Length: 140
Image 1 (cartoon, rainbow, N blue to C red):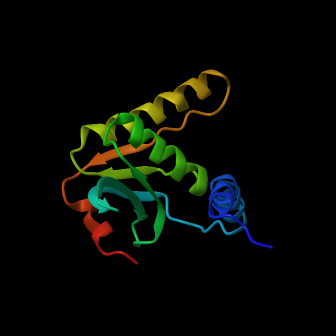
Image 2 (tube, rainbow, N blue to C red):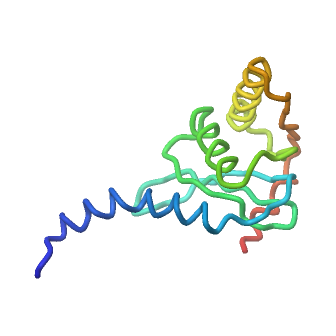
């Protein structure tokens, strides 16, 4: 039975996120509570894209994300995704990027709101140290 390529594309668009979510839940790895995060600008199919990536202090990949923007919204989306797959870190080391700091501050603000609703107050410690986050360059 032949299947049109557009039908196959619709299946991928529909089922890929569901499969990724199921896979992440079933194969969740333990990662350290101290993260190092950075982003870089890479070409994908001729278009420049931001590649966000976080690793723990041993260099194990926590999560990654591609984004067309480098701003607070993209950084917050990345941190939300990474926290969803690996739990809340104690601290995150970033470079001097204002967008990444704003993204973590937005997450910390959400944690304060949760504390006001009765949850315990937890905050992510932000360390902005240029080059310390560059363990990321040693991809595993």
